[in-house]
Length: 270
Image (cartoon, rainbow, N blue to C red):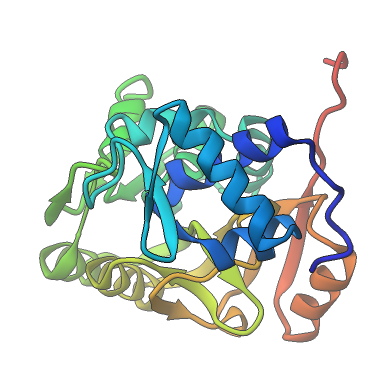
């Protein structure tokens, strides 16, 4: 069990299980017991309670959302956009400070990278390359920014594209700064993703870029997906929030990677 995790009351655990499932679709019992630092029986009771409400369905060794059919749940992107919103906005605002006039910037697919767009409005002669349809739509409000979409195989659940076509498009562009996004990262496996097509696209952007900054909040740290994108030491910097444990920040710095920490605004403060 993780001694740093504070005990949650049942209602809090139920909401946390639903939050994780909306991100992953399906989870093992073991992953939930480890994440929440509770017993196998406690997780089973929580799942039974959520099943009684029609929100989840038990599967062999785990649990899935009731509406999940093998792809991300409907309106997953819209839901994710509201998760950990203060963290995302703080990270996005800090990330935008590293964008200079005349740059070519790649914004990876994801709600954190999308949050960077409003903070780029004052930049001059900026080009934004992206594989994210929401990012492109957000850029419509900033016609002074040149926008390039990679094309490629479309993933409706994330409203983005990836794969060979996207990778080939990226290879023809000289990118100054790549803002890499991920839903899963840790010290031993680095940045990971559930899709091989996304690996190909992200690696192409990494190769085409002068610098790569990972934008990832602390709630995603310590998790792993099936396919590896890059180890932490292949990054130039990580931009995260202040709740990433200090010892983890130091471990990343020891790899020669800069860590920029975005402070979260306190409730009630402007």
